[in-house]
Image (cartoon, rainbow, N blue to C red):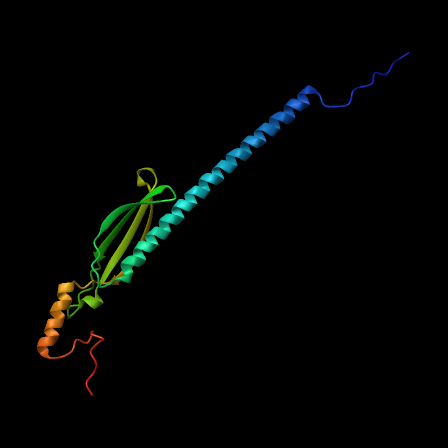
Length: 163
């Protein structure tokens, strides 16, 4: 007579080990992806801060076209990251014309460079243009010449036309 042996329901040891291995690999990959996302988010934040800092400095330089702003380099810290800022000015050489160009028709390129990271290897650069700055003593000479001629300075908005 044959006796049927009842088999116990459940998983074998090898099936449990395979399932735990798959679970451990999946959890490891999930943590690696999340860590990469965190690094990417930090990098994006640093780049955004650098862009806004560069834009702020460029707008500041463009807002005051009659002031000769010095070239400078500075370090500022935002969100715990040091940012190096440098502003460069360069006069744009115009094509030769029959008459010399007045300062109002000549341009200055303003370049703002913001760097950050170890050894400042990451950079954001913005450029803008403005009329060539007139030195304060040149404006005084222009006013003196207008006074000698007895004519009001056409750029002086306070002068009223005679009736």
